[in-house]
Length: 248
Length: 328
Image (cartoon, rainbow over the protein chains, first blue to last red):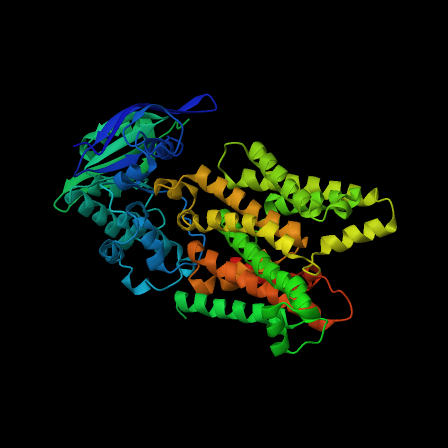
């Protein structure tokens, strides 16, 4: 069973293809790290896949009606917006909307997964930025859709929360779901993702296991960096080392 | 206080103020005699109660609820506590319609010409707004189109005043623009009530969508909310509410702005809960303000809109200061 199928997905903005002919599939059990430099088209790719952005080609999610789509995939946008000071628990419960409300168990599970039980009664807008980010991840988890698309979900989180979030994603995948998350931290991507999609100028230039994808050649060409990558007893360790010349 | 308790408390408050509005007035009738006269409808007292005070109290209730509800919907939709229902230009356009009816003297020949012209103005504003904002569901486009329509309606209102045939006609227009519930009849109630009911039904159904919008437009659509439909509901619903309210009372400011803000933290900030609470709160505030106009200077006709602005503007300033401090 495929959770998402993209077929020649293309997004044009002002005549420029910011996403150019991307074809890929997502199946259960996968945590896919969507990586690429700024402006590579990561956000556009995910928004088009969800049908939130006009596109050519085909996305299996975009073809669904809004209701079924909201039950098939949850979306965590990069802009962390909480307009009103609603209690944390009420914000998380917004994730139950596609299911017609209810789902107290799902809300509790999401709060527990993101370590928010102690904050449930607090006004969400009074929390710190990192705490708000966790509240919004919990909201997406409460949706309990098989597929979660997340745009830079761990940016701005402390190291513990970053690792915890990646572990939550791994847990979703282990339970038969899948996650596609855009990430800038290639180290965390290498450690916690089952697969990486590398996007460069809107094109999917690599799709595979982190070890197979993050080669010196690709890192130089796409990211203009040199890095150290080692398989250790404690798993893969990736560290960017230096900028390569001729970045233009 | 729980949400349910708050709604009950507000309902009791509205009921008490409605009763108060029936009992306070120029003619010195005791409370018992007033209610007896309202029930029987006999004699001069019956006429006063049924023809003067009852429509006034009913309009206070309806218009206040309409302003509170539309304010809560507009703030929820724009995700901005400083938004007010007049922002999309319908109240300005309704006022323009009424002013034209006064200027041409049409309302002297036919009592309902004024509110009907105002409703037409509001309708034209909505059509123009949707044409200007197009299919683009972004809130910013809507605000900009609303500001343009408000400015145009304001300029045309000024033009009508400028061309007024006599100082008396100009004074009449100015007084009408101040907003008042005095000297309205049951005909006004009958005209406004269906539009306010229709607007309320539309807006009260938008709660879930507005809740989702708390997370931003993208997240709301991913939760299955249709943004174009939500926007259409907000525009059509608030236009019916505000258009009808303006048509029968003139411009009454600050109620739609202040009431949702006062109640927001008490309902836990969720827009869906704020809608019914603001409807009740708006009714209470307008009934109270209208009673106050009769108590403060009973011998002069203090305009309702003047009073709400006098009380509302300082409150608004305080709100801006607080938001400024929180933002800092």
